[in-house]
Image 1 (cartoon, rainbow, N blue to C red):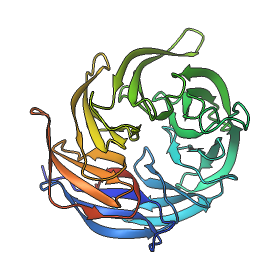
Image 2: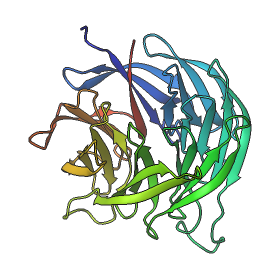
Image 3: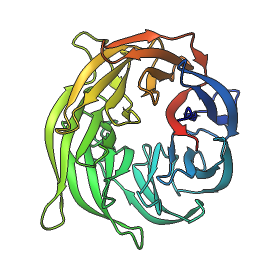
Length: 353
């Protein structure tokens, strides 16, 4: 079997930087656990990117709404079109599992936007817009809605929207014909815990929610009752930090390894990355290590597809740091010098055909 080739897409903020290139594309050296820059894409403030489930298209947040790209054979990107989300700049986006709809989370205006996706990957019209309501303008960041993440359940029935201002995840049923959403449930988190990102296990039976302010992950089982209503039951709560840690830490990322055996999260403030093993039967997480990333404010961290290396995106120190990982020994060892990249925010590894 030939060695599989990968590229990595890194989305960055461009405001305040000299650069107009919001997406950077790297060739991945799997053997040595390093990147080499391949390409840059001109786009303003690409704060988040996602890849369609059919692996053909990449979608990005931009100041002007959302932008779609065709992924070329060598991993380069070709612009298809961009579309307005009719609101303030989004912070997260994802598609449903049939790639018919694109969901955009609005942190600043607490708006959830649904857009149609055409056969050719182009972004079409807005099919629904929902504003989350808060407790009024006297409240500060907490108790004001901020939608930070939107993800479909893997059976493609329900959209989960994490609202870190209101400390809950709102669950919507998606109408696959008209692209409209209907609220069916709310998963409540502890007050001032700030649910930030969520992920479903590969088989869809478990939901993982990382909480920014209380620095932990809640694990839920997901099922559907006889009335077709989603049921979420909490089965585990596990910290993203060691017992001894820096004050004022904020949990950021939530990323599966490519084989779904491991889950990574990062802690800004503490400037550490934590890796858990996932029990495939029970969904439970078990900490393997939580160690420093040698950078400031890790917004995202990801294992290389071979699970032997790890990269941390350090937003405040404008760097990516690389590590060798030994899961058996639970070690993380710096691997070469940091790479400079302005305000990196999120990373996706992508396997070339």
